[in-house]
Length: 149
Image (cartoon, rainbow, N blue to C red; front, side, top):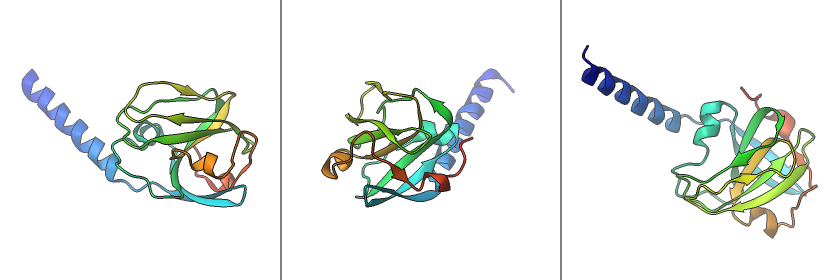
């Protein structure tokens, strides 16, 4: 196979793999913060975490995405290819929110956790503020999350 055909085959495989990942349903988890219930899709693998909420045009009220990591560490997110204005809560291994940041769509601005975090929860921008949820609030239901891979 010549190099042009090989490159074309690699590009087709990458395109098909990206679409297969986008079409895969993520596991869902019900969480509760200060009496407010939400449903979160769980991104527990590297590929799922890399895709996140990219390319989506809307996020229903009280729905979000939980990013699960194997261990607590400083976490950082950006909004490249993400069209929805989001707020992100960084959560430690005990379920306490360590910090919350608002993120603008389609930017590469970095938003980092104030302390090491094992989880990050993205919701529509302002979701946490509207409910008076701040750093220190406890997120219930994380023990039911699929393990990070």
